Image (tube, rainbow over all chains, first blue to last red; front, side, top):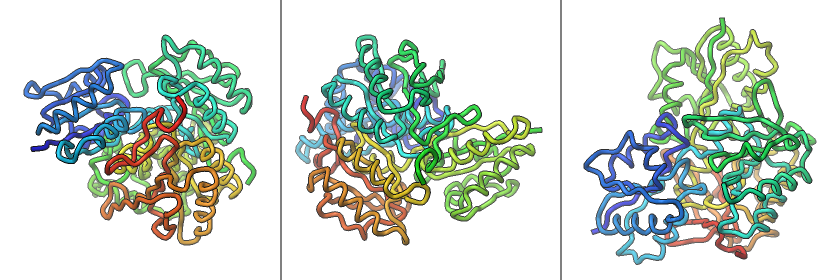
Length: 249
Length: 249
């Protein structure tokens, strides 16, 4: 007997940006597994007849294995992530481990997409991702820093807008300083940037600046950093990127 | 008297991937404006007491102005896009035009994010966007082709996964051939690619190939083209990109 695993993106915050497909996957699950704060993000859906497994940070591999094991044993399981599980969430890691199972052990799996942080932050700011953009993580936990820096250099030099995930943590602080140096080498000092913290959550906060004026101390592990592309500009109260602006026709 | 304009991303297809915030914005609108097929995408929400304005392709500026004018005159207006209105949708253009209005003429405006095509396609395929990625449009309607090609070259050379919007149309056909040439110059011939057509809509279709084997004829104006990054690989039935795979540690 094999069950089913839904790998669910809950969206950026409250239920208003959570899709009906994500809501249904959590409601129909017998077992809901996730990093503690992500489980809390769908607390409005949880029932006493469901088994709830709240994991800790750093235990992602164990959570993926537990979700696969429980679903493989016949349970209907929802593995929940904030935002979109396929963008710096649990989906890739979990599917890679699922692929290593025999077809007998492998449950039916579906990935349920969600509104990722870049889209929530973009909507708050206006439309800074309206032209081409890149979504990069600044974490050097799984890749060497020079890989992070090489990718950042390439997209900055190409003039794309940037949505930068995991820009800073308590222990990763010098990296953001270096990121700003790299960006200033390749983009104008007056390039608009924005720090969006807790987008679509209680305490939501937006700080606007430029590459020259950004204070790294305003950036936390709950922030997303948006850097305007060459077509991005301040327009009234918004940041907008109209395709074709700022580049030769 | 000024009204209110919601610029709404309806998600990729049916109601299961449309957020409650998007649904509420359409339901509460007195006037719903959009390109015809996008208005149809929220037909389940429309009522006879609402005014519905179905626009044609190529009339985006007129739609933006009509939405702003009606909201500025006091109506509650929803301007609807497929996917996320801030990603190759109506948000940037509309906000840029709104910014040119005097504050008296300018209605209250909110952008409601949605699940963009890249996320819907990624979830169908597994998690090909689980590591860093870029979302580019291949249209040369508003930017010169050499800009498209320069950006593509930069992100391909950097090894990012790619979500390529507007990959081909009835009149734009040679461009995709050239895109594949550029990609083959900078990435391995066996790099996995996927053509996702009508993601999360009736007729949804996924075609998997490699850079060497992709048939451009399988790509339509309703397709999104996903190209794996250096960390992307085929794993069981899925495409996955685990951060740290395929790059020096």
